[in-house]
Image (tube, rainbow over all chains, first blue to last red):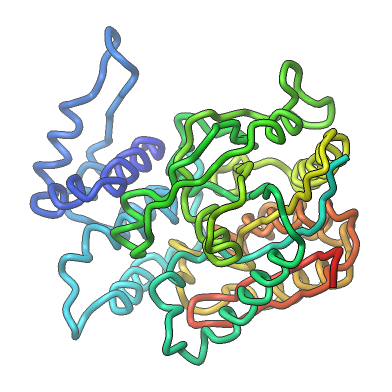
Length: 115
Length: 281
C-alpha cells in the first residue's frame, strides 16, 4: 500500500484540466502512462509506483476501493468530482454524484488515510 | 509601533462563489450578511496590511513537502489554481505582498524563539486565502502576508502551536516600528467532512460546532485548547475540521478575549464560522 502515491496521482490529475480530460477518456491507459513517466535514480525525484490494487482502482475509477486503500478524503472527493463532471446531466449532476460518493464511502466510516 | 486593529475568522467554502449570487438563495442569506458585516468592519478599521492565516488544500504544499507553518515573503502572489476555476468558477487574482511585515514575523536572519516558521517566496494562493479576501476586501488592494497552517495533512501541529502562532503574529506586529494598521484574517471551518462519510450532509458534528462557537463567543482559549487537543475527537467531527484551529490562532492573537461578534451560520453546505474582534465600533 502506498497512500502517498495514491494521493500524488489524484493531485497530479486534478490540478490540470488537460490531465483530467485525458484520464477521464481512458483511465486504465492513463494510469499506465503515468507510471511509465516516473523519474529514476539518475533524474529529478519523481517516483511513481502503485500496487496492483491501487492501479486497478484508478483504472476502474473505483471510489470505494480508493477510500478503503487510504486515499486522502479531501483529495478523493475532488478527484472524483473532477473526473465525473463531464458526465453530469440535468437529471444527474453534482448532488447525485455527492450521494453516490457518500454511499460508497460511508459504510467504511473513518479510515486511516495518513501515508 | 504598528497595531493589530482587528481579527476575523471566516469560512472559505469555494462553493459559495457560484451559489451566493443575487437573487440570493434563502439558505445563503445569512452567510452573505455576515460577510457584508465583516467587509464593513474591515473598511472601518482603515487597514494598511492584512495577515491571512489559511490552510492550503494540498495545492502548493503536499506530502512531498508538508511544513507546519509557512509565511509568504513574496513581493506578490498569484491566486487561484486551475482546478478552482474549473470546479468552483473562481477567478484568477493578483495580490500584493508585504515583505517588511513578513520579515518582522519570520525574523530576517534568525527565526523567533517561540515558533519555527517556513518561508515561501513563490506561492500560488488557493481558495483558503482568496475566498475570504474576495468577500472581506473585494478590491484586493490591501497588501497581504499569507500564512499557511498545515491542518489537513497529519501529522499536524498541535493546538498549542496554533496558539503560539497567533500570539507570535500579535507580538511581531506590536514590535514592528511602523504606524501601520494591521488586520488578521483567518479562514477555516466548523465541523467539516469534505471527502469523508458525511460529505455535504449538513454539519457532521453539531455538538462540536456548539462548543467551538462558545470558545470564541466566551473568550475561552483554555476551552479551545482542551477541546482541540484530542486529534481523534477532531477527526470524529470531520476530516477537515482541524482547519477550525485557524480561528483559535485568531483568538490567541486577540489575547483570548471574547469575540465582539460570533455566529455559526447554517447553509446547504455546512456550518460556517464568523468570528470578529474589533477595536472600532
